[in-house]
Image (cartoon, rainbow, N blue to C red; front, side, top):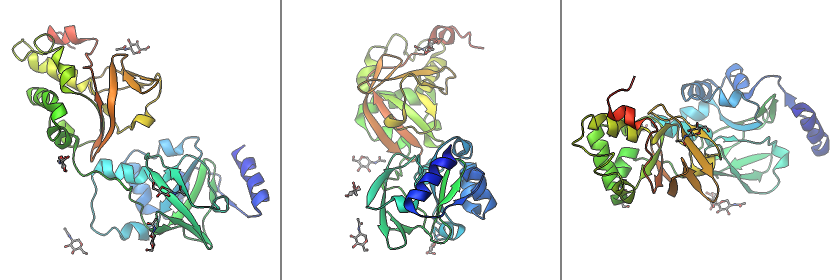
Length: 299
Ligand SMILES: *[C@@H]1O[C@H](CO)[C@@H](O)[C@H](O)[C@H]1NC(C)=O
Ligand SMILES: *[C@@H]1O[C@H](CO)[C@@H](O)[C@H](O)[C@H]1NC(C)=O
Ligand SMILES: *[C@@H]1O[C@H](CO)[C@@H](O)[C@H](O)[C@H]1NC(C)=O
Ligand SMILES: *[C@@H]1O[C@H](CO)[C@@H](O)[C@H](O)[C@H]1NC(C)=O
Ligand SMILES: *[C@@H]1O[C@H](CO)[C@@H](O)[C@H](O)[C@H]1NC(C)=O
């Protein structure tokens, strides 16, 4: 199916296309994209990019990675950089006739501009001609000569950003009580961050530092707000279930904005951090098993 669509494109555009009956991930591994392959593997992107697609990957060569020199990135930053090279569509160079902005898997736009014989990306990187438009069975590979860095690549961690924002004063205190600030200094997470007014309802009831098992309760409640992997609001889907660090899923509703577990509305989305993304919510999320936690009867 994919192949026949591309054959039709090739006929219309009068270009010849190279076809490889393998996934883009396999093609990269087999064709000397050592740094890119290693990075995709280390960031857990091999599996999603081996899926049906279609994907277009602008693939930095080893020489492109070498140009980064000793520049280092956090794990979440590296994930964002890699996702910024992928568009969920099949794009062959002759299809791009005017400058345009493509939405990347990372979420931010990539500016592509046709220049004689090739494409210029973000005014910084070029598609290397001679071996581009590699059609694989789940997408297209274009080698590029410079690694693309998303326009916004945040440098502060989730923990640092929370400490710096007075809307999250109560959350910061709760994180201290739970001993959880360290968790939010690394990794790659999405945090649904309750603002101060969200805590008011539960202070002195569910959340009371004096109750027995207070630390376990604080940890359960706060871990229930954290899900592995940075997801922008646009990457949250209606009826999606998100695994949390507490081990019980959150339910997402997308309808005129994002709501979590039917109670907590996202009131400020996409606060980008070096280790993930914060979405501020107006209500605390209480895990369904909180009574078990409170009674100390957790397995
Ligand atoms: C990184 O490379 C630059 C230029 O090559 C050099 O000036 C700098 O000292 C290096 N930094 C580290 C931490 O190695
Ligand atoms: C792409 O986005 C940039 C930044 O928002 C904008 O300056 C530029 O005009 C856009 N280009 C096109 C072709 O839409
Ligand atoms: C692209 O680079 C050229 C030359 O350095 C510069 O004149 C132009 O303003 C740049 N365009 C954008 C959109 O950054
Ligand atoms: C704290 O907030 C100020 C003002 O918004 C900003 O300039 C600064 O970069 C922030 N620092 C951190 C660690 O987020
Ligand atoms: C989330 O959805 C699942 C499946 O519909 C349901 O079993 C669970 O109770 C829901 N959780 C909450 C907190 O609403």
